[in-house]
Length: 301
Image (cartoon, rainbow, N blue to C red):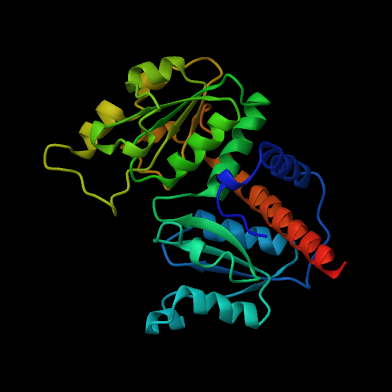
């Protein structure tokens, strides 16, 4: 059993993980020292990597250390052989972040170690999506009829892709906002609105990081110009609906996507998202492990 994209989960499965995450706030799980996890991150990460490790340790799992810079993959070993090696030594779950989109297609049917996608290129980010869904669910009690605007670097964002499809399946109305040049041609069916319209109509304004590593600001497109035209300024925040919230997957470029003073304002749920990241990833791990054990039981019988 793997957890690779939300597209592969039913609506009931998504709610099962959300409810399990909520339950984990109240009930400490039984430790699982018989299980081993490893986090293979081939792209930089703070929140995802650390919260997965925190989640694994809170579940009482053994966590193997892994440094991509010193691993044999730097000698030319394939990702497949790396995972097969970890499988051979007894790893139960591997969380992987990789720059190649859908890297997991070459692994999922060939390894018994359960895989959790920690982010694949500009493709999918299921754990970020799940913690975002949990944050919205806690605020509004559901998704149907909510107006959600995802604003910013749409083309380069796996967060935008994962959240858009999941939210639409759950009944939310999703719009995009941001520079025309950063629209995603694969999601042309999603309407684009100006940021001034978005702040007035949206229940959730989900800002995206400008991904400097994937492109650069042009000479005529400064950070200040981006903030004034496409960012959440102090003036725009004042026009937001009474109970609407601000979200951002982080890391935040303060003064670019969002004004510095708004990062921790009353509307902001940015650090709540990070806090939710641990219980959500605990729930994801429990979901995968439960399905894994069900499969083993079926094979024995």
